[in-house]
Image (cartoon, rainbow, N blue to C red):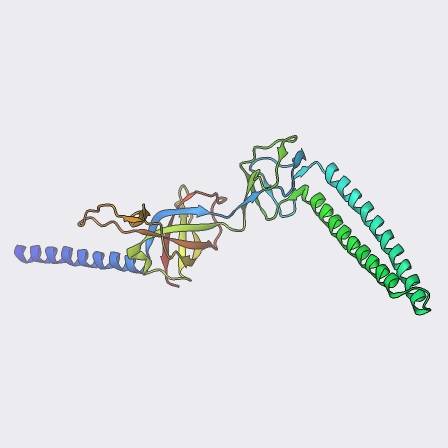
Length: 285
């Protein structure tokens, strides 16, 4: 009896081990899991389109802003003067155009009555066309001046959070120079890095369970939207026109990790911040 009991216990332990191994393998296949995941978001670099000294900054670092909120204003006086000058030039060109049109009408009537010859009429036509072209150019110059005046006031292009702002009123800024970063609050996602042995078990549309570090008891839902098609490889990079291949140990082959893009669908337990660490498990719906 004792020997039989020992066999029963041993077989039971082996059976439980086989069942547990099968369950873990099923979990590995059906629910790939990684703790190598990070919160990501799009960052909008804010740069002025015109140069000049800043006269107003109503925001502060790390502030939340809405699309259309004023971020900063460049001294508009120079651009307003350019608008006024372009408007005056346009009126001058329009007056010259009217005068040319009146002269053209006179020359046309005189030509019809055979008082003037064709040369005078053609000269009047050329003058009118030139005046019309001057008006078009002056209108374009005025529109450009108005655009530059509008560019002197910079608004938030998206909803988001101001970060890395180190600018004060009085600072002279240049066109195209990035002054601050705006984290797009509508673009937060999870970048989960799965082993290449797991990627084949993940597909677009799979459901994901996301857990932030520090909030392990409060998971939230997500959905796989895409899988990366490649990663940077150090081996095989070209150096002096020849591929550089580093030595590897054949019996130790570490699987590569590929980023999987996951869209947040549930409600996170805390505001998402770029770089936060997360754990992710996926499963087929």
